[in-house]
Each structure stands twice: as C-alpha cells, then as structure tokens.
Length: 207
Image 1 (tube, rainbow, N blue to C red):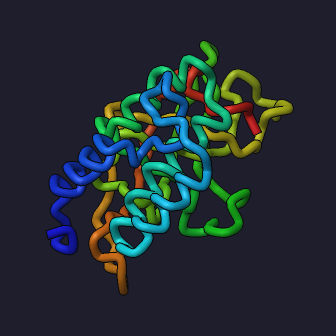
Image 2 (image 1 turned 180 degrees about the vertical axis):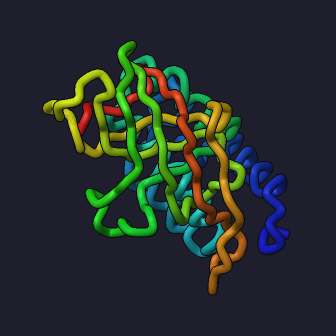
C-alpha cells in the first residue's frame, strides 16, 4: 500500500509512532516529547532504519523537521509547531535542494524578498522533497533580497531558513519522482509562488 502511494496510511503510521512516543524521543516534555537520551533515540532509529521507505519518512519528520526547530527555533516557534510535529498531527518536510544546487546549497536560486513590514515573499522551486506530497510544514531555504532598497544590504544573498505552512497561499507540490527505490516514500518538487511568510517565521538568524 505504501509503494502504491497510499499517503493516508503513511500519515496513520506516523500518528501510531507518535502515540508510542517514538517521534519525540529526545524532545523536551513541555513540547510533548519524552526527553530521553541520545542512545534511546539511536535504538529507535536503528529499528526504523530496517525499513528503508519508512525510515526516510520517519527521518524527514524527526531529523529534518523537528531537529532544526529544537536547535534554532524561538520559544514561540517551538510552542507553535513542535507539539503538532511530535504528535503526528502535522507532517514536516525539509526543502533545501534545487535542480542546480544539491550538495552546493549556497547555489540556491529560491528568493526571499523582504517586505517593508518585515515579512518575506518566497519565490522559487525546490526539488526531491521527502514527505512533500502530504507534508503540512516545510523548512525552506532561500536567499534574501530587500525590496525596500535598490542597493544590496548586509543581508542580500544570504541563504536563510523559513518556516512555511502548506496552507500559505502560493504553496503547491508537483508529481512524484520516478525512483529506482524507496517507492514507499514521497519525493516531489515544492513550488513557491509569491508565498507570504511572516517575519516571525524566520528560523534562526538571516544567513
């Protein structure tokens, strides 16, 4: 069923994992986690890793979505998103790669144009996004531009991370990639068309 792209089943499995506490093993209890040690998390990861497609989905939720928030999120960002990710209510994805910038992340062309009110407008396309077809939440990397000033400022061209919800206007995903393996995981492009992102959804610092 997973290899036939039954993403409803996949979401159910994430929720079941969450109910067992496996999504938030080393997440603080205040955000719904178990606050266990890294060895416990590694034992869970080892078990999950025996199932490749499921392991990719699981890693997209825990390593790629939850960990950046734990390391760089503000208290407000953590309170808003971590409990929903840990519970499986919200599925996360990580959007860094592009057609011309995989391992060369700084070659990204996706733009984040700062507006006069401090918000950003994101435009561009990300590729090979794990969990992309059914994710509710994306950590998106884009280069900052300043619409308020024709002269490049100190932030111009700096690759930065933004917390983007699927519900934001202009967020869409493309067709599933035809892959040689991992058929039970979702891998799609993420398309951003003038997506308005609040200033408070910058993850960490600009750059």
